[in-house]
Image (tube, rainbow, N blue to C red; front, side, top):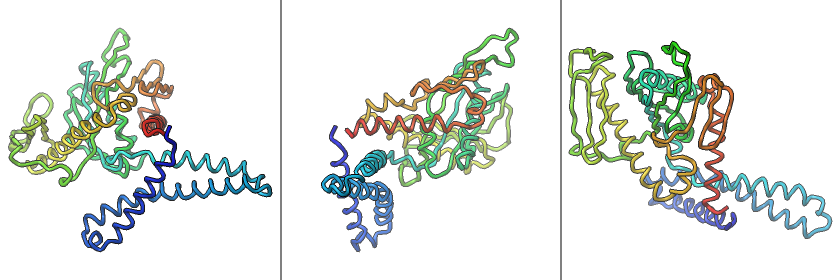
Length: 349
């Protein structure tokens, strides 16, 4: 364990460097660079203040130990140093640069036929209600409803500060065990739905060459294949270099469907690059906390036992009804804490 001192020294160097750059007229006059430096300086302010307080508390503790008249204060000062050190460790964990972003969430029915589509609808309600509890806004981008209820696929955006830091842990396969309404024998069925969570990015963050796109327009259709409108307003965009395909047909205008499709395509391309980088940088830790990939089973929701189990952190709660109503805070807090612990371990502190 290298200890926290090298991280604090690096923090102080970075903070001083950013302050000097912000005072540089060349940087100050470049609005984009000044905004970037200012944002990074703001991100370091909290950890920097903690570092100053921690160093002050350590100095006070050293004085108390050296001075018999102050010896009675040593116990309280030791507690202060330990508390500040723990807070500082967490503050120094390198944040995912995407954490502050809005997100695009894709839910698709998995194994289980009609019941899987109904389950996808239940997950959509759970995740949008969770957004309401957190003060986030949601926007449906695309919905392909199943004739039996629920969704074959639904894509929606969640907007709010830190949305990705919350929703990124929902990516993966969600498994449900329950008796379907159509089951006359009362047998428990197991069905799945998959969730993908991607940061929403601006045009400047992901450059897409027009020549890399194949754009098809067609007539939008509803459940059962009937035509919804009489114009070719639906849009299918294929990104030729990666083979990614995004289709949109919910809006009445071709332009609106194209804009929505491009939002989803940018998010998918950004996530593709992010996954590549994370795999290279943190393969071990990523496999421990979970990959967020659709194939990975992250939770089981058992209706007969009113039980929900998160397989990544071995957390079980017997309040399924509340969780399905969007009360996911306990699970988010627990997996964020585990993620921070593994980050600290990887950093050697």
